[in-house]
Amino acid sequence: MSTQVKERPILFSGNMIKAILENRKCQTRRVIKPQAHHYSEDVLGQRKLYPCSGPDDFGDPSKAIGIPWAVGDRLWVRETWWDRKDRLPQVQDLNAVHYGDWEPPKDMAYMHYRRPSIHMPRWAARLFLTVKAVRVERLQDISEADARAEGYPDDSPIRIGPFLWFRGLWDSLNAKKPGCSWSDNPWIWCLSFQRIAI
Image (cartoon, rainbow, N blue to C red; front, side):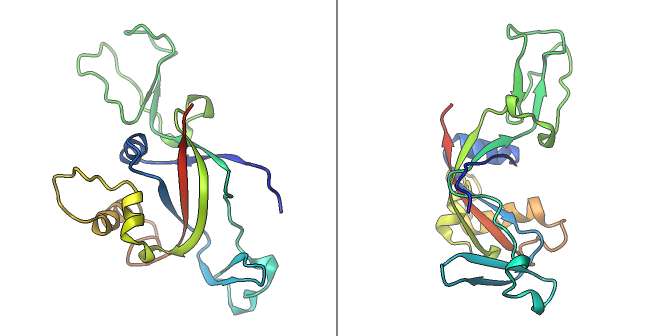
């Protein structure tokens, strides 16, 4: 078992970036792929997930789904961004990088070209996270406290609780993906993290 800290990218939407920056978000949930069929703990307490490929795979360590993150791993956040270093500058910073939660002024002399988060290089990242815990659960097993830790906006003009808010957020991001909607109740990785001050 390796204890080496890994560094890897993770994607977040603009609203979730804002929640991280406002210290409202310290958890994220990601669908396990492939979906697990069996879940167990061995005698050492290590969690094992087995894919939906059939009952013969249950208990076979070679078929277990590996956990992609470990406590202490560092995540650099990929977000929608603009890179202005190849364009004529209209502000003082020649190498300005603007992020997805930034809106360009309406009177700007030229257009910015948005770049999708998937293409953000590490050098442009402004947010770094440390993994504090990783667990496996069904999506609908989320508690109200965990829904709040997903970035619930306490000052929202629409007064719904954290649980219903998270359900709506989840489906807005995942409902169109086969097997990933709230009603599908997929197995998920639940990551707890802490923002690193850089």
